[in-house]
Image (tube, rainbow over all chains, first blue to last red; front, side, top):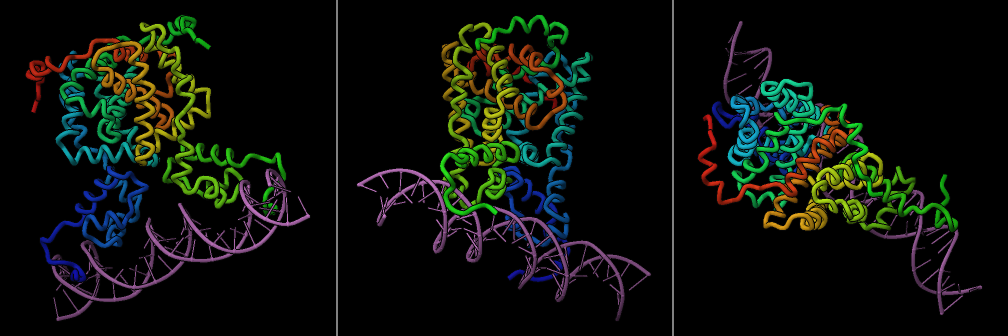
Length: 212
Length: 212
DNA sequence: CGAATTATTCAACAAGCGTTGACCTGATCA
DNA sequence: TGATCAGGTCAACGCTTGTTGAATAATTCG
């Protein structure tokens, strides 16, 4: 039986144990299917302690989804060579997902939860906007930067979702180097390539052959 | 108060009312946050009736996620002109999401639920594999077809998720024609363009500059 | 017609959920 | 030393959930 009350000093830091357990479960199961009791059990702690720390379940989520400091570090310098920025970006993102468990769990939790919880969705949009858009701004300076950043974000997010969460065979079979060499140029294109102008689209629309 | 027992013939077909309500809610909220009572309420029906029809909640999900017949129709003939297949594919996908509420709800439910429920994930993989992979096979005939199909799938899925579910501003601001003109060529590239061979990747890896 | 089947509602159950309040214990500090 | 406070456990509450069984009414069929 566990001893009651406050433990001796220097014992385990339950606060971060809880946070780590929450991140694990949120990334595995998503927000809804993760129960407070399960988090408490994995952290080896009483459920009430989580409320003592974070107030309620949303508070725990908010603490879990703190804006990822690693994201800044992930991107700094990635765009130094504008011609290789696409490949470099893909390389870094995949590298960190393959090796850095902690970052992968946090980002997976954000992606999983972002589709069901408005707070996470907002954070997802904000994080993306802050980092990717700013980085894109360093490379290219036209009026389509937001569009470019969104395209890059959705392609990369789709890739991570499909490979690491959905485990689509065609993507899990590929090596990181393969992915970098294949997706990198596309990202590069979205970064610095030509984006069709809005004015030209009217005439190219008549070009569109609907077979209905 | 509603009358008990079986109603007169020719009255509303509750079976499909329930199915429609379930699809709506699953696509809006995902599987977990959708309650049987909410489905029943939207269909104007007692919760127990859903069990009478579909057994349990998973049965309802299975009925909801019946393999989309519209997907076949969506793709037939899209690849007739191999040089424009990419744009044509994007055009059709976006068109059906913009106009066909029913199909959008079913696909949204699949995407939302696929990330939390194994049954839906399997169906998602299977549907994608069956339709996209087969279609890709009609256009290109190398040994990377599965890889190509997966790349197309994850990019398109990411696009739909970001634009219609997450509502990323940079993408909701774009017109369908813009998206077709921008993403189409990339899909075309994944379809018929050159994919780096596995053998060449060893040497190109030394090219990778890690700045750590 | 009578029997069987289907459609439908009602009331309730058991389990699990997030959350709360009371209580205890060790550290901190005036 | 004694008050205060953060860390921690326990037991329980109130609510919602998926699910069930019984009852009833319309339909179908021999």
